[in-house]
Image (tube, rainbow, N blue to C red; front, side, top):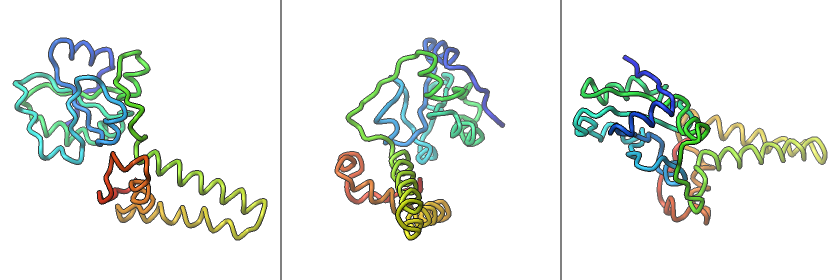
Length: 184
């Protein structure tokens, strides 16, 4: 069982008629940017929710690009299990914005942790490679170390860089100091 995809404009029409919009992104993503009125239900907490409580209204799921909703369409469809119509916004929040539809942005919130990890890892790999080419081949150890760290994060689900970034001053209010890290 899969969920049909609808355009952002179609989703807007459904919402105007009372449909429920569900944002499945994680809290850090939702805090930085979201669609006003969207119910925040992170994919990681989907099992705890009861979408049948919305009185048979259509439910529309979205993420940032549409990849997560598409990849978890079966799980999302099972969550509504015939209690109502359910759809996926094709292209997610990115397509919503491209369609000129409004979003709520709070630039005081840090950018998403996954993007911070990508920026940090990419910068270290680039700088290490450039220094390896220009200064000393020993600097090639930096991108090798970053690559090994990312591989281990993918295999184990523990990302040391994410754990360090959560403790960074700009992230303290969003993550506190003891929240466990997820792999990026």
